[in-house]
Image (cartoon, helix red, strand yellow):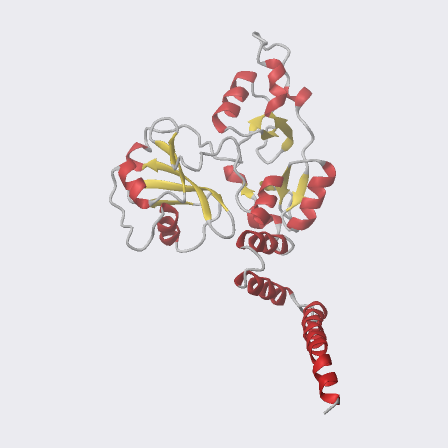
Length: 301
């Protein structure tokens, strides 16, 4: 009986130490049992998100960072047909009109052959010439920058490192025959990691729909169908989908890439911004106005 108090006295620290050891063992197993492949790692991260250890935005960014090592330039590049370019022999007036219309900050400069990219024009480099009334001193070859060319098979994580090292923001994508296939920007790559990046040309979050010229609109994909109907006097059903983005995604039948278009409910709808998870921004044109509306598109590049 004399030993019992001693046993009771030591029971608490033993239990505490045992609990501590158990916790340390679980932690050690978590650290030592490293995922054997990417799928296992993503599964572990998703479990952490479900347990509120990791917030959804952080999980999406980590998944995006893992994804860029798998994706190639061809997967997210802007196709050649959608590139806004200026010609080497264009005069200043035509170039300024293209810059203002598109809202882009960088333009490939092409020669006589549309497949010949001779340089890159930065819109800011035109400022010195805007006050030149006769434009006699302007020559695009004096201000254009060298073009950077990358193969369409290059991995995005490799390209991102090259962008950062060179402080270059745009590259011309070429296919296996050295023909121009498209272009890609550092923003395109970063958006694969962090999601859509809004800039000064994007519409405000509370401003779902913005008109550009005659019957040409920029519409956020998150626009409620009810608000879209009220604005355009349409009658799209919101029984299955709450937003116009969900409705259009269903109409495509797949997650569309930037630049894809579809005719739907009397509108021509073009995807301006999208990542591998969702649609972000749409260009909407009422179809009865398409014949009259011939101005070039001004989507982001």
